[in-house]
Length: 322
Image (cartoon, rainbow, N blue to C red; front, side):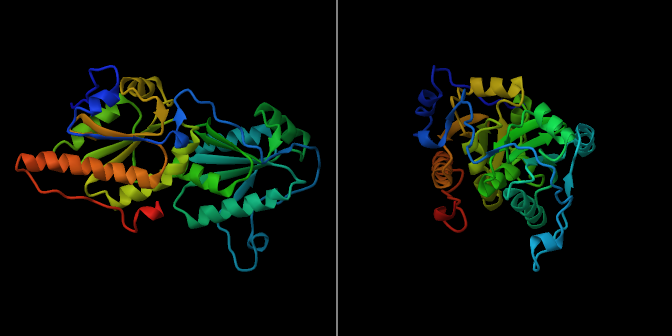
């Protein structure tokens, strides 16, 4: 089985400079240090008590005369209903929206989530908790440490994988893509063994592997992920895109330490078990340029051995669309 080699020097960047003018780029303003703590967003209001009834599911009339909804928004009103809904979902993504009956954003949240479900390829279940509706929902909010609404919590296999405070549509879209895309061409890796297997699987076809490593709650990691999906679809004939969350388990974190990853997201450019470059940051255009640079280097090395001519694969639509 192939294994990605680790630099022998104290710095991976030093190692990269010895690999045929290998490329390395960093954008510190678009990445987080590995030990970062996500900052809470501020667009939320305090949870207050009210007993106003709220809709149980989104209907065509609530969305407007020209819109239809096929996605049920399940409202839960007790801890028992909440736990049972998560249990039945198993490994499917569950997005729980905590809101208030006196918040104007509650209706917007339902309409938005229903629209996303009907217009995207993301599979998820949406649960709605009106935190101030009854004593039971208040107890549920206390158990889940909800003090401000709106708040969104993402669950898989009954475990929290992400939290988002405030209702920001763009952030939620990024989060849903990152955690809910089932048919993505981006390969999900869960440890060092997965990395080695992926490397071995593509040794024969000599494809470049672009491995994105990050953390589950890293904002820049999520923001760039839709771009990664687009690149994987456009460049799939010559480039394999994969991703790993360092805090998923100890094997993933050990891999990040071994590769000397200190900021996320970091993209490692791997071929035949060796690292030929990396990009640190979350700017799609810069990432594409670094991938093309790495392709140029690899093709130049092969051309020097009489193997093949230089081929540069670009992104359809231009870098300005990333």
